[in-house]
Amino acid sequence: MKRPLSGWGCSQVMDCDVRDWDAEHVSLWAQHGGIARGLGRAYGDSAYNQQLTVETGSLNRVVQFDSESGVLVAEGGLSLYAMLRTIVPHGWFVPVTPGTQFVTLGGMIAADVHGKNHHHQGSFAHCVDWIEMMDPTGQRHRVSREQDPAWFNWTCGGMGLTGVILYAQIRLLPIHSPWIEQTTVVTPDLEATMHCFESKVDAPYSVAWLDASARGSKLGRSVVFLGAHQNESELPPGEWIAPRRSCPEVPRLPFGVVNRWTTDLFNTVYYRKQSNNQKPVHWQTYFYPLDGLNHWNRVYGPKGFAQFQTVIPIDSAPACIPLLLKIVRIHGFASPVSVLKKMGAEASGISFPMPGYTLTVDLPNRSGLRKLMSQLIDCAIDHGGRFYLAKDLHLTAEQCFRADSRMDAFRAFREARGMRSVFVSEQSKRLGL
Image (cartoon, rainbow, N blue to C red):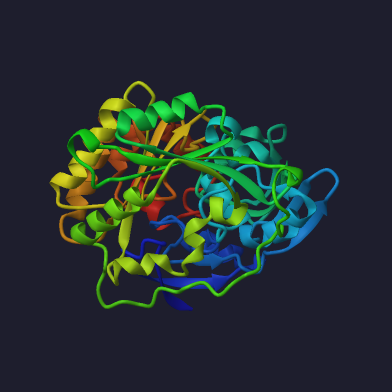
């Protein structure tokens, strides 16, 4: 069935042939090339293909959950939202989580998601024991670090281009209460923000909201949120799963409300309202603040938005990040959601993170965006940076391969396994993967 699809950024919409998951569709994959799609939270074009997009919503079962050992086996289409409601009441959490619950297990593996604790726990692949894959001929294979490790490694971060993730086994993190002890640190500039990350490196979780509107001596001022799981005995009793309240929903708007003036006002007010403090917050509040506003992407209007996310090596970050923020301002753009995180060790395959700092900025889709994105990308590459494919819509093939030397080996692996003509997304076409 033909249906318009886009990424979460909604800035590129394509009419796609969309099918529900069915093993009988293998012949269609081989004939047309296609891609699996979970909940559509990749920001760009990595989870749709005009010729064939296969939705995995029916692959949503928890197959096995051992509440004693914290081992979970589930289908690739299971949402993180549903998973957490199964495991958290038993005292378990996912070791690595992205900033939304509305992603699938398969999507987390395919993007090798990272969280606020990458400097301690690494990316999601570290908690994955094995993955059951569908190959280009429709056959099923279990891959792991011991069994076909090359396939396992390229799958974690491979954006669904190495096969369909049918099942996976993951190891969970034990927790003793629903509370996160959150420490808020308000910093006056980028140097102080980075110093906070470095001096608080022992904090299990750390993330900074960065005021991308600030200039001059205030450039890079931020609000850093540190966090750690707490014991129930240390804090007031709380519900493991907070009741699902009716969340506000952003309606479809004929125009976007995000522009330079509204963003500058929001950033200034938000920063000034913050103060240094320490308090317990529920895990749902700490990890998923944007999930409390349904369809928050609609605030950008019908043209949508794009996200730029790069990771810059430690030594280059103090020089590069101010340049990136200044480029955004020079082009007359502003970002209300700008995030800075410290990253840890690099994983195998084409997983995004590496030691350094990752900067994320959300930008409305309007005239001049493509030129801005090109300059941001080139600036990051010049400083040794690379890019998160789960957020990308503007990389060129030349920029992609120039930024990350691993892409040649990834493409060669796909070619050798007969995957390049079968597992195909609009992104993989654009980037020549």
